[in-house]
Image 1 (cartoon, rainbow, N blue to C red):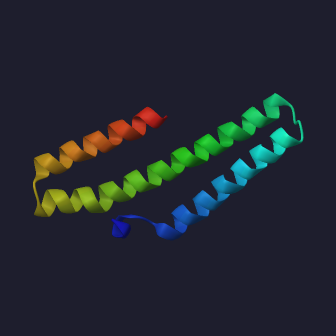
Image 2 (cartoon, helix red, strand yellow):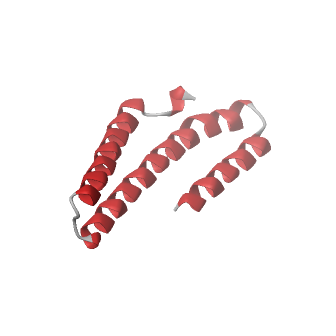
Image 3 (cartoon, rainbow, N blue to C red):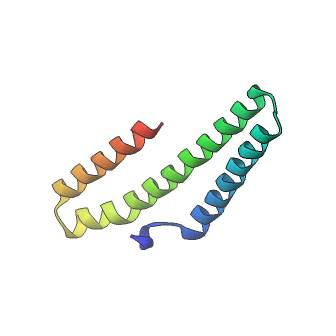
Length: 91
């Protein structure tokens, strides 16, 4: 599974999200206006969604491609469709 992921890119993105979450926590402690907190929550949500896209793209380029070329294509496509469905529910 690690072969299909751009680990350095994902780690960078996750560290950014962690920083955003810490900022949200600090904003709540400092009694920052709700609108500003909601903007930061939206940014963190968008960043997390992008992490999912990167993982999904890597999965498609490596795991799905390999499964179609060297395995059971129908099973691979069905599993990919299920993964896309789960990811779409997060949005």
